[in-house]
Length: 128
View 1 (cartoon, rainbow, N blue to C red):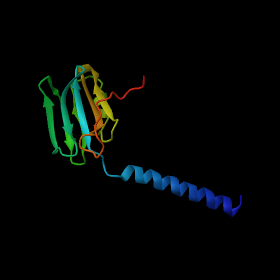
View 2: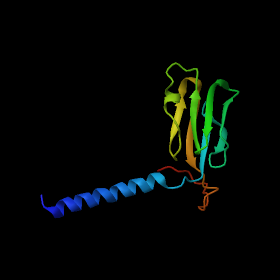
View 3: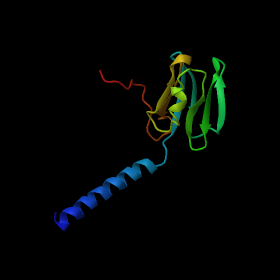
View 4: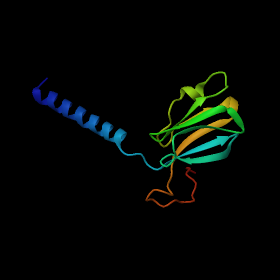
């Protein structure tokens, strides 16, 4: 290989690494955690304004959630047999979700357009 080829490959890898780093380190958007129980929304939490706390819901107090100081939420305890929901870890980005199917809970992270500079539309976000 020529020195030019090696230099080009290293420069390309550096650019890819920088883009990856910038995408991970950008400030969080206004994120909202939507919590469902049996397919019904029971709570909406603005993660950018929420204070760190541990909580559960009366529908099943054995399922415990926690909001962390870095605007993340997670299942921290559950009485389900497989514990998949707990092992999903922290949810922090738009599109992240975790489910405790035996107990009927789902947590989904969405971008909150009402607090962003973009106007909220009432149109469904689907492809027809």
